Length: 173
Image (cartoon, rainbow, N blue to C red; front, top):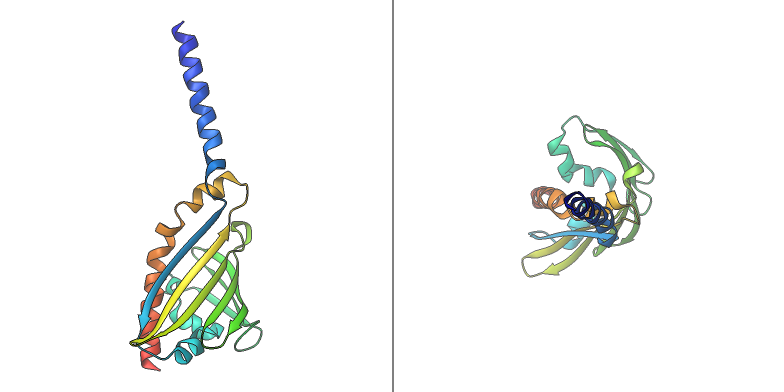
């Protein structure tokens, strides 16, 4: 009797562990905002070029030896860079640009996916409110869905650091 009860409890526990990830969201969203004491066109000028983004890139702070290769046009749609460093490699390409107000960038992280990153610029009395966001489709993969619930914790502080870098660079321009 006791062995049967234990087997049933273990079976239910294993079934719960196996099924739970499929109940998690298939999408993840992380966003951070900051007011930058600079006009939207100055902030946009930094973010709309791959080399400008590299100047505020918070991942470079964590990995000063990060190797970056630029490609495509200097600015706007198609401006791109690839990187390789201690945390991995990938590519970021500007896929949509609305001068002075919004940029969308496709990230290619290889097997980790292709999330969409965006910057939205909103003029405010103190300068420009910049919202840096990322949206990831996690699909049916249970491991990616579990990873998705930790994305805000993993990327939030990095985006906050990047916005501080942006403020420093934008005020200096």
